[in-house]
Image (cartoon, rainbow, N blue to C red):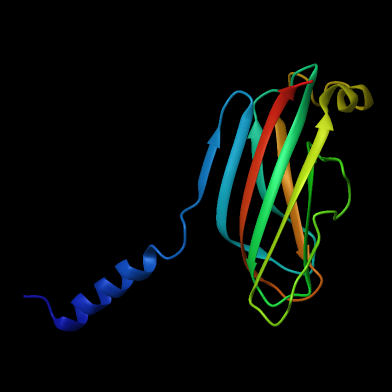
Length: 158
């Protein structure tokens, strides 16, 4: 027979293991999505998630949506996105949200885009018929902690 302490320990582990959502990714010919929990975020701008669309196509536009929900006491939370190292529009930390640092939760989101033909004209051989590595970046002005990051990307015909 098992000891009551061992049973209680196993029950506690099982009860708390489902508290955080598991990471999930999905990708297809024209889309790539991911949700990652427990992503560290702080005052230094850092990559907080990445997805890949297999091939860029002519006459298409890349659209990316990012949502960050951070469990931190912070004054603000910001995000921006790049593809193959080139910033998407609008550029800069435009997905910035002012947070109430009296509460432990802060959420921000941003919608970003790029014309793949324009990107290819500026850097031939980098975007069309090449993998599109989309990276979301995030930071706070104050505070650090863990965040849940969701990235939704797709290429659409113009």
